[in-house]
Length: 610
Image 1 (cartoon, rainbow, N blue to C red):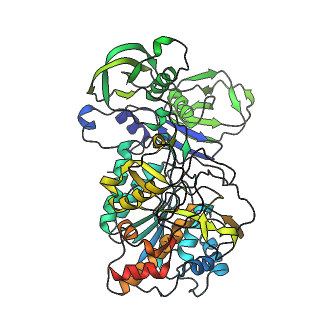
Image 2: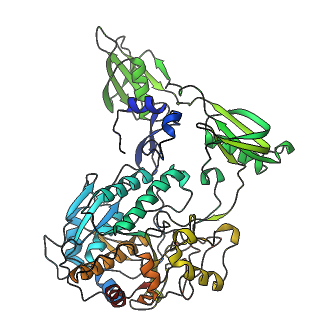
Image 3: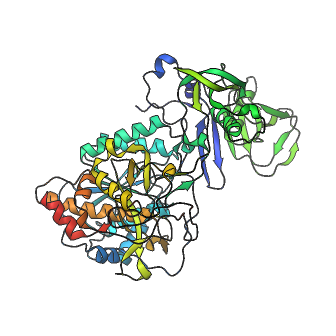
């Protein structure tokens, strides 16, 4: 259910305060709430709340590219994988690119790409997007969206292609909106290409387990609906990390009982957990901290503290960056507090005869203040939430459900390998990356080394319950794989990715009249999605249904793919960024390149035969 409200209404209903968060390095701004609560009689009926918290995927530097590299175009991909034999004409066949993170495409870039790299297409028809869905596209032509749409369409022109954009910068919230929109659309495209994911603890994005469950349930429903979701497997190799355990694990809605060793004030759940983590991992020398088993956080009983401001007697000089109506001087202070970090400058001008007035905000270097007895100026102080209580226990004797308190075990630092999510969902098909050996077109393929082809084993989904179709392939890999990482850093029972792979380095992308060389599994994913859209067209022309949920079919037809046996994914986002642990390519399926790269005619034969 989607609920629209004013900020004030949402703050009242959820007992919270909203703030403007600015990431100057990444160049984006989001509006997010602080801690919130729901009445107990309502919370019992809520699975997850989207829209209050939630961050975008952290932006990373582009992978370092070692020279030389092969120029990959639609023609090279068609030649490499033998793509031919299908003339698209089936009614009802469509495909789509999903775009997040504020990534936009430009129609002109797409038309220029077709003109330069694609042959045998109808100008003004095959080189245009058939429909835009979701948020309004700004026609900026960002690199990721340009790559996705150009290669989904360029390899197999003639199939209607849509662009589904969700740009709120809340990754999990956007995934929920996107999957729900597909489910609600009876005419949704049959194949969707997704080049976004995160190799790390999802709690860093404020994507709690309940939110993951909602999204995964939607993906399962899409699989049942006959929709193919193709997702890039990540560009950070095995995803090796030494994470903060307080970011990794979501606390439970329970209260512990036991021997209390500390009961102190804390401003939030994360601070309580990290304080416990500091003591458990011996960052404090006192021996009394040994033996801590867990912690419970109790939020503050009252509402969050209001924004506070320091007032001056003169007005700010210079031109304001924004002007709005404020109901009072205190309201202008609140507007300033929500607009930016500590020190946001403002000037309030009351309307004669009343308390309302205008609220002007200022940025940059302050001009010399001027005296004006009719105006009041000031600057915002940090907003500090009310403090709760953090209780740490030794010898935990029991626990009980609690509507507002949160608890967790004593956090212990531990190495971990992270597959990319949502690629690790069992209801999507994950695509890894390869390159030509010797950078020679037509040569054998190996795992990418411009970046690490994302892959590994999920802790969220296990094979026995969610991915039995890959059980034999994964068992064979684990039995024969050389130099596996230590058992404690990855779960061998988890849903394993990727499922397939394809060329992922050196894609030629047109953007604002320039040719860019782009790499990543975000390139191999739309390539593979394009091949599935072609196979769908052939099946529909023959009176068959679309391919739909692909994974069981892939693992039953591994001879339709070329096995990749060279390389590994002990590499981060750069050819010289080696990770402590990674997985190796081997004969058969592996967590670097899956079952291998496409052999289009064999894929087509297998698809048409069953």
